Length: 381
Ligand SMILES: O=C(O)CCC(=O)C(=O)O
Ligand SMILES: [Fe+2]
Image 1 (tube, rainbow, N blue to C red):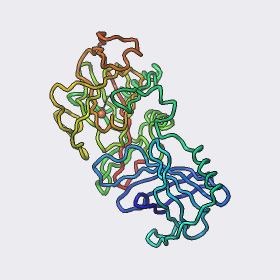
Image 2: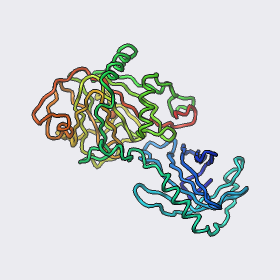
Image 3: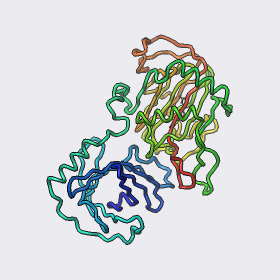
Image 4: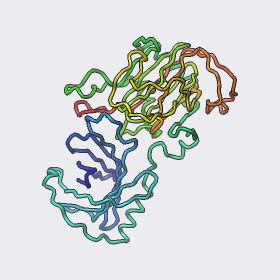
């Protein structure tokens, strides 16, 4: 199938009504998932596509692109239909045509272009309204996430209290203490799971299975829509352990990861800060700042104050995406005691007031993300 310059690949329509798309274009890596529906002579399908250049060092799109195709039911041979783009929170708009061939063996370069026939209006509108009904909201826009969204100066930040029960927190801490092989750093201890050595072509890391207890958490985040089982599954878990007085310098996680991070806190609370975004060239690729022990990025101007702070409680889940991920550095101050200031957005919900202070204990966090594969040697998904 080919649609304008945006999509080139194979689409599979399953008997169960699913649509699966796999990019076959040059250096693009991509996949898509969706649904199809028919009414009499008309077939409509909708697919969320996540694709990026394998060699790109910039941030990829923040959400999958959603497209819709509608045409006469395909017979053998060439197939043509309307191609609609469903931009975020906007009605679908026709952006061109798709051309396809109903044979898995035909190379796209030989695809003959057929003129688009007039589609019977009633059947077409039936198909479109059925697709509207089947349409799932974009990830994290599901109504169940609304109460957890922190409306304010920085969008795309969600906080869930008591995501884990105290018993689960303890159980995970026990497993971590028993099984972790920490890399000791000055600012914290750390260990990353989900990937191992470089792949044969040298562009990605080989996939490694997550320990069972982490898989359970990762699967739960998939079910809740934080990650997508096909388009951007969570495949990377970084554990960080901080003693009182340790923290993490303000940093951006970078384009190595799909722009969303989920952080589960165990042990002590901490205050997690987001900093104002700067009008700067964003870091490309991945470089490590050895002094600060975080991904490298230009220094914030001295004295820059956090723009949004959150108290992360043990058992809580923090999810940030979009601009909060791409442009606003985040960090944790290296202090032994946290002061509640008026910037601590969720202090009141937790029953704390400005001026209160809390002593830190040992905190362990799990940062769960989608590490973007950069080749097809060992697909991470
Ligand atoms: O420990 C935390 O909550 C933050 C960790 C973090 O920012 C990271 O691993 O990139
Ligand atoms: Fe981070």
